[in-house]
Image 1 (cartoon, rainbow, N blue to C red):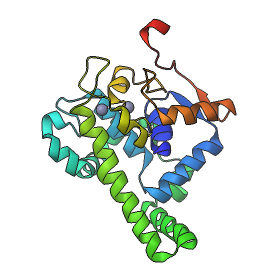
Image 2 (tube, rainbow, N blue to C red; image 1 turned 135 degrees about the horizontal axis):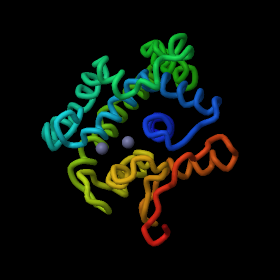
Image 3 (spheres, rainbow, N blue to C red; image 1 turned 90 degrees about the vertical axis):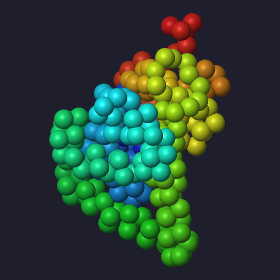
Image 4 (cartoon, rainbow, N blue to C red; image 1 turned 90 degrees about the horizontal axis):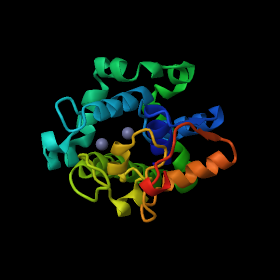
Length: 227
Ligand SMILES: [Zn+2]
Ligand SMILES: [Zn+2]
């Protein structure tokens, strides 16, 4: 979740953070071993979602497609959009494959295979397969849909837009479920606004920034009275 939220989402898609190369490499490796996804595709689909939020062109809007179709078919809608070369080149031309991507990270399935093998070395083969399948179901089948489906369906709101906050789910999703705040201020590296809105990724970012591994490049979200 941290690799997705901090690296793919806040640093790449919205350019609100810049990471030291070593941190970027660690996040890319984690995503390769645990998801097998391609960063340019993820960023393109996400930027398209922000461009067309809940109107024609949004890749995964529950308002257009229906709540359950997004909740259950989120991965299908993601893959369909991610495989569209026009989406990728229109929305993420800045993230063309670099040498790391070409040499290592574009081999998505081999990353997942290696991930299983590494986990197997620690906890045994069957346990590793079960753990990775469980992780896949949780990541692809639960957490993604909670943000793209539920996050555009119901919850609390601080701002007038079509997204919603869930303070409890934000603990599980690395802060991503503070989605109403995020749509109001997409370039803020901090998703929590109120004291009760905990954004675990922001805590990790503050920690990484304290040891100069991350630089915060745009103004964090603040309550109006603090501005
Ligand atoms: Zn959204
Ligand atoms: Zn976003």
